[in-house]
Length: 434
Image (cartoon, rainbow, N blue to C red; front, side, top):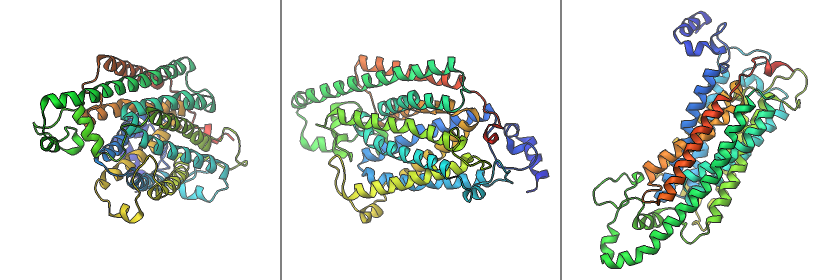
């Protein structure tokens, strides 16, 4: 396709015409408009809020998390390759914005190391959160990790981005996320108390109802990951529902301290808070680590290196966990993993969603500022929806739990709006001024 033909297409697609893709012929695609950046953030918000639900679904079905994460890691890396070889190779590069393959040969290792460091901490965070989902629940895990990410990561990005975001708007949004951390912890505590009360009352209810063991064996869960919707299903949120779930799931949580889940959750949040600032440094070189005349990494090249380290760490750790599992999980092997095809398609889909979600977040952040792009950390709004619809989280809970849950979600809605409103616009010459 020549530039004349491409210009005709651009005239038919106004939203793309705002970007450098459609300015003076065909060249490498970079999001440069604020509208395009916000569109990237919203798509990333949906993708990044959905993939954890798929991993949770598989764990609740009984699939070992090591098997799931190995599948997930493969397509997560594939998404980075696809982005690099498509968007990163579209058109002709410029000296200050080389194409993906051309930039691989340049002496830009300081920035490469920042990108790879971001991939390492993201991989560790995702791995921790996968186990935390079982202990703390999908919704609360996402709330706490996302809030920590925004409180720490967004503050760092604000200063790294030369304060292009509006501080008087940005930091009240950060404050809303901080409040949500405490509300999320309160939701978890209240819901754990509700579940404990249900289980304590179950034995007496069981005796009064005189349910036979045969009848109990026929009980099926109502949650949608089993694909069952018949009238004889157990209602989500009941004691029988919780017991049936515990028997079926891969990670057993009954009798384990809630501190395990909270420790995993806070560890994941700390890891997540560092990957976006590391990526910011990789693409904008605020610390001037590159030699004079070496162009900054494009978002596509940085994302490629970022994903390499993320993939390598995930493979090493999860193969180790196959033979030396944590949290009393059963041992497995590479042979058993290869033979375990049940649910594999969902794990592969989760990897694609996460990979494209991260890519879109970084593309939007390059244009509007990474502090504003961290608004995708409001992904618990999406995850909570899936948690309630698919897994029956918080059903038949106390009024106190519902009040806390509503307050938590309200703070997230406010925080997302405030963080989006704070977005600035990075000058197109910003990345080439050195």
